[in-house]
Length: 120
Image (cartoon, rainbow, N blue to C red):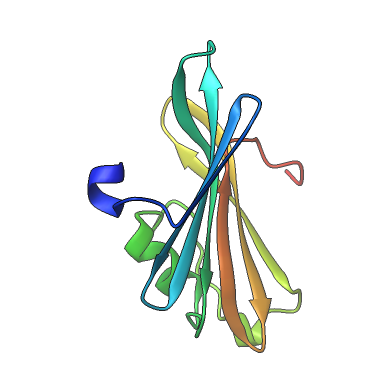
């Protein structure tokens, strides 16, 4: 993973968790990694915060490889709630929680958690 992203701008280790922060043009990626069996780190959750923010869920999710897994699409400016929630389904794995936070009619943060959605 670091080969593609480079070195993180920030790194913090707390017990079995490691938090990594990467900055790119127009966005910030935060990863929460946990040690499975005390050795190998795996990404347990991540979030991308956008400066400008995509207008639709698809525009936010597609470049991250989450489309169409988090369909249906939704226009942020027309959303009745400040948070779009989706269950991401991947064959052979329990559903994962995906959220898109809306502010100013744009998606400002997209997050994926290795937890089953509590709203299903």
